[in-house]
Structure formats: structure tokens, C-alpha cells
Image (cartoon, rainbow, N blue to C red; front, side, top):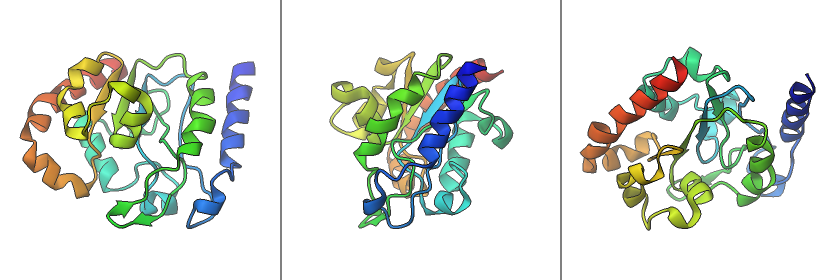
Length: 196
């Protein structure tokens, strides 16, 4: 019961966070989902505009593709008994020249460790995109996202490194057919083992 209260308190504090407010295009609206029961942690970059509007993590075309990659239903995906969703930044950072702006680093620095400390059952962390990979892998990350993802086995069993499932990455997926041929089947097996 005490642990439950501590987690609720942490969630309340995150929801009330205004740490990056001056740099954001809209009022802060932290979007995340976690529980001490989760087996799999999904770490992306930051919510996009659609997710900012709905308030539901991965509630867009990227989320659809991510669920397809893992072969999981929406129902299981949003069940914190299986998945926690904790991006590198919790609020929509705004538009950049080519896509959204990078997640402000202060968010992960402030909140990531207190959250991870409350999730003892995590068996697998999906690092989606270069910002999540930089944040977690540090010097073990390769010089490009493609190289990091190509060497995905180096990061097993703890991490699965993935490109962002955004439709913006369709060209990358076409150029790198090995990803859906070799890595995705392994991801499905691993996820299925943890949630079935």
C-alpha cells in the first residue's frame, strides 16, 4: 500500500511539472503511463502533436506501427501490467524544420531515475529512436541510429533498439529491409514471452 501511494505521489508530481514550460509551444501536459507491475518499458522521444491533443501515449500512426511490430493489441499495450510508457520528455516539444523538436534533456534528468526505481519487474526496455538510445546507451551507442539498430544483439537481453516507427521513417525502412526481416520477428518472440 505504501509503495502504491509513493507511485501515485510521483505521478501527481510529474503531472504538475512545469520545468520546461518556457521552452514549450503549449502549456505543459505530461503524457506517460507506468506501474510497478510492468514487464516492458517503452522509451520514445516525446509526444507528437496528436498525442498532445489526445493525452494518450502513442495514440497515432507511430503507435499503430509499434503495436504491429510487437504484435500486441491496443488493450494489452495500454495495460500497465505489461507495458510502461516513459518517453525522454513528457510534453510536446514543438515543431522543428524536419519533424518535431528534440526532447528537452531536463525532463529525463529530473524524472527518469525516480520512475525506474519504482519499476522492479522490468525485463525489457525498448529504446525507440536516437534520443532514447543516446540517453540509455551513452557511449555504447554507435555513431548512427542505423549502426546501433544493426548491432541490436549487442544490447540484449536488457534492451531492444528500434528506429522510430513514424511514417517519416518509411524511406529508412525501405532502405533497411533486414530490420523487418531479422529484428522484428525476434522482438515479437521476446515480447510475447513476457506478456503471455
